[in-house]
Figure 1 (cartoon, helix red, strand yellow):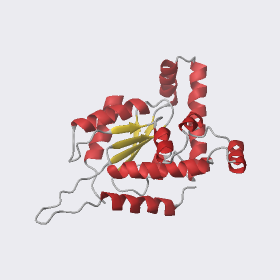
Figure 2 (tube, helix red, strand yellow; figure 1 turned 135 degrees about the vertical axis):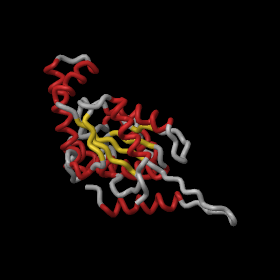
Figure 3 (cartoon, rainbow, N blue to C red; figure 1 turned 180 degrees about the horizontal axis):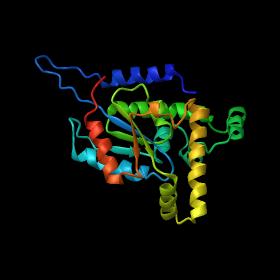
Figure 4 (cartoon, one colour; figure 1 turned 180 degrees about the vertical axis):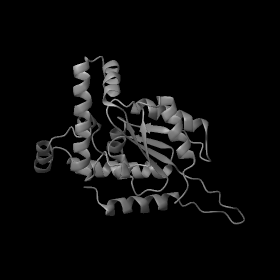
Length: 236
């Protein structure tokens, strides 16, 4: 489990990095560094919503004109790069795709860093990126790993199973039965990942500011709803 001590370390690091000296006679202009985490059920269109959200926020700047960046499958490449780990490991790093046996072998034979170490590294990278602002994290337990950071909006995407099955069928050219198995197995994998490595329940509504049903809202509407919430998020 990721400890509160690790989260506090991330907060301390961010506060130190974001403190900039104010020249004599100048008023300090406060820039709010916002970030978003997106948790999702399989087949909810998280990747599409994240990209549309980034575009929407880019069109509605709020003091920080740097481009909004989406971190999804590319997140682990960034984590490995930040911590001087072999980039080839990214191929085997997926949410709950590493078995307990592999983790034990890694600890005993030093084949690669154990999963929990990589997740802690991921938390440190997320905290650093979130502290700078204008980032959107999709998955990887980002809602938990950045839970104590101010100005991070946590979102959960859901949709009826039938809707998600149809989307998965079209997106991945699957049969209806294959799409059903895909959605169910992905949801179970993410639930295991949260429980095993983060000590949390991915479906716990208290982890999120917003729960958005993409079965009732299309991707553009979902992105706008989330984006407007981000823009109106106040400092703690």
